[in-house]
View 1 (cartoon, one colour):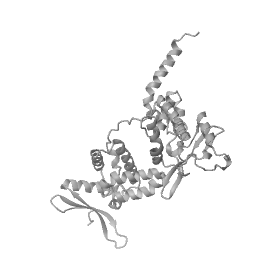
View 2 (tube, rainbow, N blue to C red):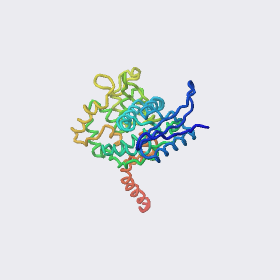
View 3 (cartoon, helix red, strand yellow):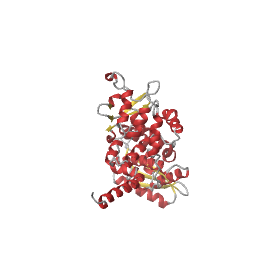
View 4 (cartoon, rainbow, N blue to C red):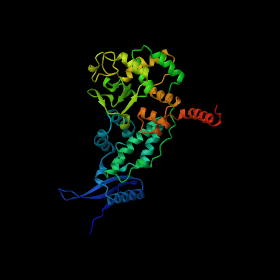
Length: 372
């Protein structure tokens, strides 16, 4: 008589041992089982057994479900995330999982994690006053990890797909208006990092990008700068890294007054510039962004009586002023290295009403003004 492929064994008043046959040991030829303790009534135990048998019949590797989420995430980070992510992004992934996912879900077996478990986790994070933006970012990382688990046939489906996320209010972007930008231009005149601030304000290049620029990236004759890499601090020292995405590698036209600043700053022997960094700390090494903000950017804003924006917000200021000036959104998108024009317009939607006002006036002038 054939043995049962699954068993439910009572272990207490509301505790059950669910056993699923997984085959025979290759060395001893003894039958092997996957055991899972279920708390609740017999109905819950039977439902779990039916689920496990169904997953086994559809090809999922039941033995793999013995590993915990912690164990799986370690392997996923090493095998999948590390080869395709920049060092900074990988560090962000590891940090989000370590702070928000592993404490609550890490000890659970990978196969046992349900959408309800993940929903409860996000609810707890909201109670802890974690922002909706951070929860959504954490969810994106966890969902990606579990998606790969489903591809590897370790779980039948991705439980993160069935989770409701908290609503994220649009974050107000901190920017300088046109008048404040003019004040900023006056304030940076004669500053030790005059050309750095001018480049940031007029091109919208990311800090991680312009802090990694070399003199070889600058073409003074054509008045352009090429963004092709970033500079990051890793264990062992500073290293050049790839840009955020392929579209981030771009050639940007500089304004004439910014080119003039670099001509004054350029080394006398142009051929000896090599890979010398365009912007350097006082001691000659790379600039550490956090220290630069503390020592130079914040004091500059304070002395000029300007809003306390972030250094990154000079990028947003550059884009906003360009839109107000009537520059094509496509040109701005390419200059910023965005994935698409639609993304650019979505980020800077606060400028669109003003653009529509100006557009309406121009069209009206064409339609109603009589020719001379």
